[in-house]
Figure (tube, rainbow, N blue to C red):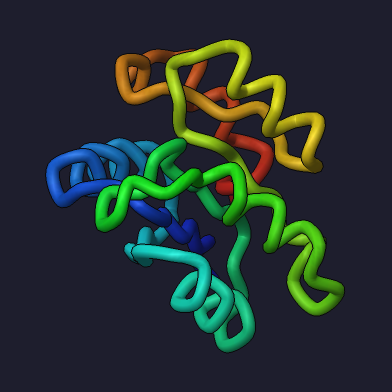
Length: 124
């Protein structure tokens, strides 16, 4: 069965860049969510292997780190790995401190290092 990545809070072009990169490197599907509520609904109704959350959500520019924290605090879905999508090292560290796993920035979507970061979660 193919893996599933949920991408939360990215605009259409950035979502499509992530989806293209994932689908060309892994046997994985990518679905888009826009905030905490629809992300939690997806986590509760599908087997999700990884969640990526934009540092600033596209729809309302709220803090994606708060979405990550809420997912990690939820006993039903908190075990799912969550990555913050940000180019800023200090935000990556804040994500790790909150229970996330090391993520990547939009500027490095097509880098080998990004594929290596995703491999443990999306490889068959």
